[in-house]
Image (tube, rainbow, N blue to C red):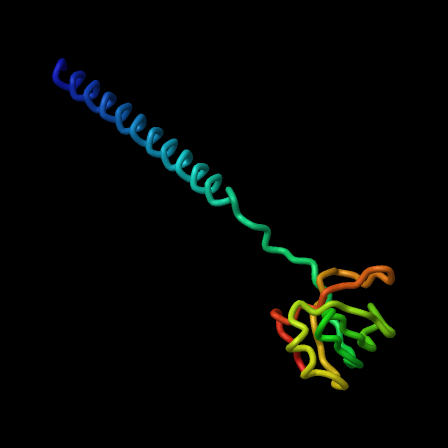
Length: 124
């Protein structure tokens, strides 16, 4: 009888130790998960950029000032507009052509001179 009681006591002790190890393991995994998630968001630049995709005809380009005069055909910014090009020497190739391009804003402001992002790509 004493032997059976001892075996049960030993089994219960093993189960308690196993449960404690399991809890410690789960806590360690939880802590590491939170640490990795927290560290992965530190000092990361924002991924979202506000840009508007427009289509228009380039009327003229002033390579000295970098100003581009374009008749925008897209409904979100329709009409004759003045833009600034981030690379005006490349914009001169598109004079009198219909192209699609990005500007540095998510909406067209009548009182602002937006910048055309030549580096983001221009499509004919």
